[in-house]
Image (cartoon, rainbow, N blue to C red; front, side, top):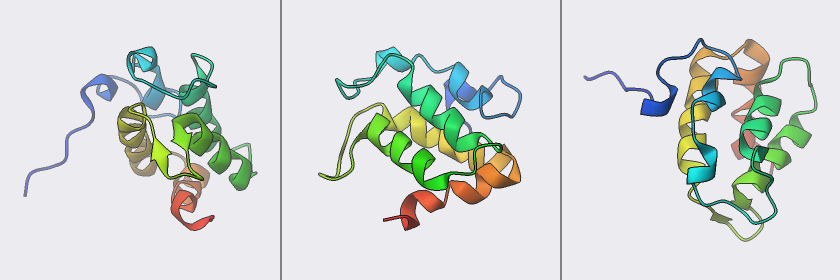
Length: 107
């Protein structure tokens, strides 16, 4: 079985919440009009931050940065964000790894 490879833009960084989002050129990807240019990486950092224990806030911030979760629509910026979430799950601190599965169970 082949090992999964990282998203090409994420391969050369140390393994932290900042590393999973710093190498992606986020403005290249279509995203919600309400986002500031740095909202997606900021939302990923919030999710990966072990000092912020408010899982629900991090959850909603990320979903809102990726699209309209109430309507079930997401923007192309979700694609590199999925790779970043995989990095958080694989290499993040324990709190971040526990928080990330919360994305599918918080509804």
